[in-house]
Image 1 (spheres, one colour):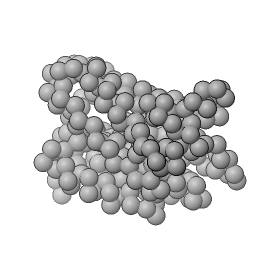
Image 2: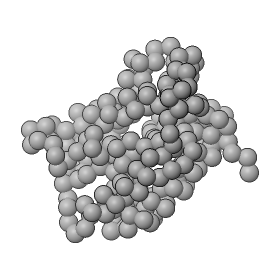
Image 3: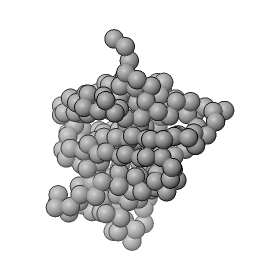
Image 4: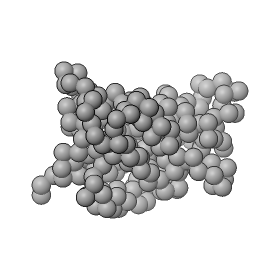
Length: 227
């Protein structure tokens, strides 16, 4: 659910600049081919934004750390550092994808969700809008991981907070429902994607960002929260 889009707002055609951070783990880094190649989906997002907002100076940065976890890893420390580093030119939008490695580490969805909320809060407190993505499926379905992923994605989808928006990336880039021929093209090792797969990710995320930029009340950074 997240924030409600203000459909009465005028379209933001006069945006002079737009700064976006794509934040997460190996799926944000674009890990592929056992780590020999990296194809961040952000490259496709940048391409689509420039096509649709030709008069806007668009910056799309990437912070993806392979193997990182939301609970026991460095997610929170990293997002704090990225926002602090960008305080002189803050991000307008931060796209967050996290939880895959936590699920693989047998963490409970409620705990992952609570840790994600801390990450989102740092981003929002920096003045940015957040686009929270659902966690992708994977080939590996041992134990209760499929059910835990569904529970986590449901928690993410129903989180309500000002300046936080949601996109169901899991449905846009599926594993189980994708036909075998397309899966062979898009998926690399059952967890990570190929170059085509990461472009598919970018092609799914970019239209959501474009929609939000044109419809939310405050598409740009509103300044850090006063403490």
